[in-house]
Length: 524
Image (cartoon, rainbow, N blue to C red; front, side):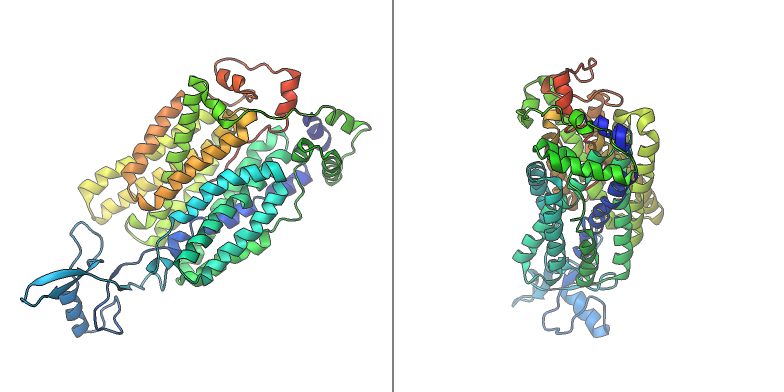
């Protein structure tokens, strides 16, 4: 399919493409509202065991008698913990008059920050990322087999319904199923839109199309922070953040003409191209589609495991996978655990989220100047050094306010680096994997990232984040640069990629056009 002819006639970034690129990634705004909403809905407030025999017991001290009862029944927390009270045990006096401890089965929670959170009943953040992992595997397959638009519409409906229904969850097991479904269908809500954007614009504008979604994601995160600050009840917050999903049912979006061509649906593909030409106020010459559709692409026989048949290509693939795992662990770990940095929880969330803005701007300004590899390596190493540097402020400063501020600044530097690294991991991978396995390579990379996401809520350790990011950045030095190079089409070209200029036969060039330009920039 000679699709470059289409761009030459209708324009690379006309009104039709601008409509697709600006409206479609609004799904990333919705994802920004829901992806890290667990920071608020699943937050664990300060708590202690409920006092036996006190029907109206509260975390806040009510009276002198209440104060004495708490001190006599609740042991203090260990010196190295940030809590005041032991959160698991009650103190009691046995028949011999000895003070002993026993586990408690009911708790009271501090409501000075949150009026209620779902974590008061359950803590199941990893189910969301588990849904993302499975969705990353299956959505790509569905999008290639059944179409980008159909996958988008079906996923968007179930994504909205699953997210909204959590507010009325009847129990723990049902909540787990609902949360898993939110993660699963979220992939189908934003990934097909990304692919549509990439397949509708010309080569010169793929960088812009790939970066737009990152800004929508940022604005969604900032909106979540504002809503979380104003709404302290998890049920209300869940309803408010899920409700905008009704606006992102993009059933009116066109199908990808590239995908339609690959399915042999030439008349439908032609109709969409003609519509784009009308929007862009251009006229198509006679016999135009005879040139565009003159050759039918051959079926793709390559599989993801073919990347590992060669030692060099296999090693590079593993390095790319490890970078995805490390950057996702650091990115979501820093975001979801920003409340542990000291100071105000909401300020920490806002500042951590805001680091995506300078990171995205840096990628826009430097991407074509420095190349993909330096930004990937620089982002990962910056994130790693920022996180690792906190070991000095934590060890030597303790809880001193000045050292807490220094820790917070270093963690923000780490988040900036992680955000740059995440952006470049998407873009680099889209150009690194050969065309014949590009979708499979991106899906496998995304799965590695979701493993990091699953672990992120439970590894609140800046040293771990930093060490893995730094290691990933150093390993990325062994990857080839992709800027300005012809994209590899076959596994054989992937093996040679970076060591010599790739030469294309006409047959290979035709196959390439169906998958060309699959680069990404989203933290989803």
